[in-house]
Image 1 (cartoon, rainbow, N blue to C red):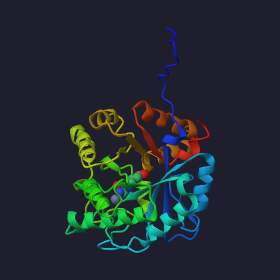
Image 2: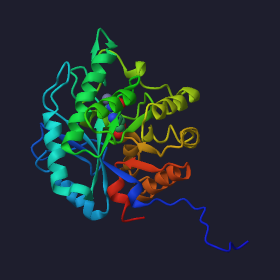
Image 3: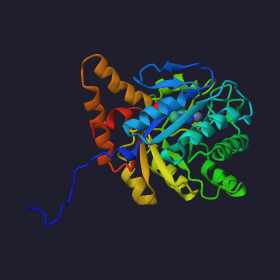
Image 4: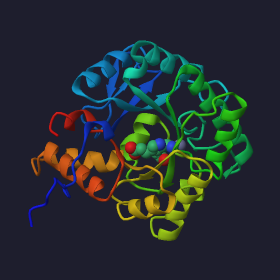
Length: 306
Ligand code: PBG
Ligand code: ZN
């Protein structure tokens, strides 16, 4: 039957639902390639604005920043490099871009864990304290959205409380609300210098084989005040997005992580598939699965193809 008015049941990606990750590394002078991630580089703070400008011209507007400082800290309190980077970006681009900041400790703790730990155990209080200092510093510098990826208990609730104390009452949180312990984070960990030492992340990241736990983690984050939810890796979370949305009524996105993105690149490199088509296909499935936004290393490559 021909409908009386246009109804589209076909999934489509729009550029404004895409988020492009970016790495800024204090140790780097110019830019450094990231193994497996194609046109993604680690940038110096001097060159980052030029790189963002290029992507903006292509039609990418949303960016998720991973800021990697030089100095490791046992109890992280000094986020001045992060502050300078964010402030410089916001000074140049203002409201033309949306700046999300990955908020975690694994690029700054000496053992690469997402929290402050002692004797192979995370100290939750110290972890929250450091994350609070970090998030509030990012907001002072002009960050638009805080994106905690640590996966510790009650981080969202703790951060929201500190925002109120500091007058950032309406500062939004995009929580990595369902994040699996995964083998697909390899290329990222090289770039973020965040490989864990001593013990793995299974005490705080989720097991892939427990559906209820995975959904509950997002519901918990919603109850703590998260404004946006996000699941990752994408391909191991496709079946969860719709249930999380109907349980929380919050916008829920998906992160196509470094390992899944790299696998598409490798198929192309080995002449076993076409990169752009592979990328488009994978993103369409996230959209079909009802993702409201998508974080992908290929955002800049796909916007002109849509
Ligand atoms: C760190 C963090 C990770 C990713 C985003 N934030 C890695 C990890 O948890 O070990 C993964 C992103 C990717 O692989 O693209 N908290
Ligand atoms: Zn981390």
